[in-house]
Image (cartoon, rainbow, N blue to C red; front, side):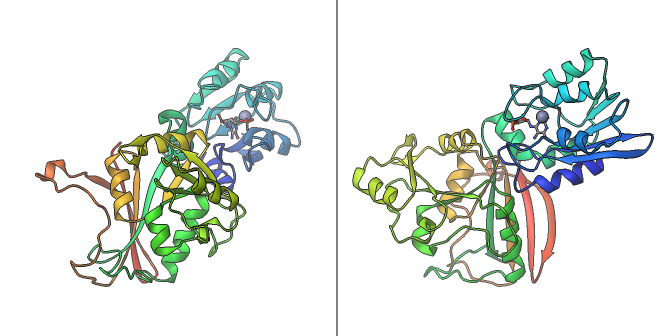
Length: 353
Ligand code: AOF
Ligand code: ZN
């Protein structure tokens, strides 16, 4: 199963919107075939692994990071293929929460007399498929805030200057985060201030994440860099037809989302991103939208790069949150990881949701 999890990583950046499943078929301590899901529409992990078993897979054990599918989607059901290959046993880390599958793949195997075991390395498999599981189980993507700050937690000087706080190694690391994301989300404030591209450039990547801008009043300037290249998705509550048409003429896809007062309803935005098939979304934006996303309860993880630099209390902070009356009200997170990235430190923390 550890090998199946390693194979799953090969589809990490490209399997979206599908889960990056990994599969190993073995018999008598020998691996007969390996597979992973590389791209939606291409063979599932099981189909690839079965095809790699030159001598067939009769009586073999199949290790899978996710339950085999039971439905006709873009490809035929993997459970049927495993039955036809007369495998002896299937060990799957997790049930597939996709309502089209959810237990039916296991049922199909069991009724054909195949032994089914679940739960092996389940925590690691949940980690490998966290975006897909979030979208299927909660109807929203796994949402990660990426931030870069000084040691004293500041992201920009009072006058707005913010380039560059962290070093080159951190920048490359951020691009690796972008590469694994299905979508990159930012707000209009960040676009007006920094004019970001939000593309993957400093690491190899065979697929660019979709860029998404929350722009309540459609203030995106037609010359913004985010409008170049693959068309971004612009989410708005504005009814201004002229502005919409100007952005559409520049290639953007403009979608109206539910409002919460004059602002966009961020829970609705999260649902829309899931409906679009985005499993993992990384947010690079300023304190206001960061804070609003936290308050809306749609943030799962914060990845923070800290540079050994002091910017002072007059500089701008990371998260615009209300002043809490008691520490008990302040959101508490759980450390997941801390490490050095070049001259900077990266910490990853998760909210309990
Ligand atoms: C598997 N093995 O390797 C993957 C599975 O429309 P399709 O044919 O691309 O199927 C997509 C669904 O299949 C996806 O939503 C998930 O439930 C499952 N993914 N299943 O047996 C795989 N990637
Ligand atoms: Zn399948």
